[in-house]
Length: 418
Image 1 (cartoon, rainbow, N blue to C red):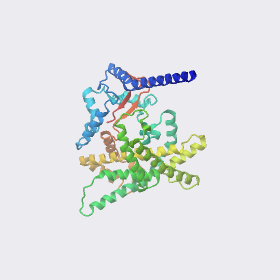
Image 2: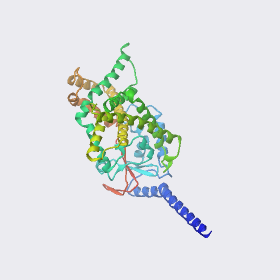
Image 3: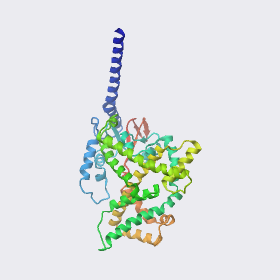
Image 4: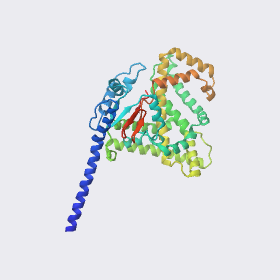
């Protein structure tokens, strides 16, 4: 009986100790650490809203964004107030040396070019932001790796983007563009004109280009993967509008269940595609010269040479990343290019004259595309005014000196590309 009482008391003490440790960690995470970070930043001349328990500025940020997006977008090159209204308001209210709260983490705005150069060069000190682990179900692979793992993966993938390989993809690009233009020509052939929303066509175009050039299929075959990714993106936007509480991802909420189910469906579709291609390559069949072939071939060579190549899971994540990251960024560039060319018909004329002069009626080739100087200038200007990614966030895992600033561990930095 005495032994039982001793064990009971020891277990009770252990549980109380664990609860105190967890309680202290929770208090430090939601209040003590954020207030310490805020004090450190204010002492260095940074300004921002006072920290609000757990949520920070997230609620206001997304509320303002929803309200702004509910109105039509003004036809102006100054898109900051519409695209990132809260960050725009913060900069106006507090100046360039400001910070915004993403939950219990302050994100410092860095606008000095030399400091930005240092952030991008010191990628081991300024690491990718880690938030809700469920977000990895949408995009993972090279985009999430750091250090040596990133270097090794990049080395395997690099051959897929050599200039000669990209030249081989031009016929696929040409075919996808021709298919879209034929649809538009049919729409105008009866009356000689037709009003249409070009955005969905350009989305389908970029998806078709990725399917043909990267995976040797058509958009129709890849449509299910794109749809699942689109569904996942909607769920991801819901997740980033809330503060992630550690362990929450394991709860069987509706969003968590849907996110995991769609992730499994995408993985299975890609796994079958990869296995078929791997089997064909090992059987000596002729290469398709697309991204998937290059990725699998490079992986096989790496496995044979050093046994350090990518697993099937790794290849799946890289394929998924390429499906996701390549299509919307490109379609955004194309649609804004069309908007600006419509607003500036003199540049539209210059671009058309150059294309007709350099290419004439022939199919575009790599040499001809490289000589389109005016078109290249236009594309760069569109990227400057309407960048597909408006902000780049990096975490600060340990205290570090950045120019004349001393950034505390646990803070984040924001490179406002827009």
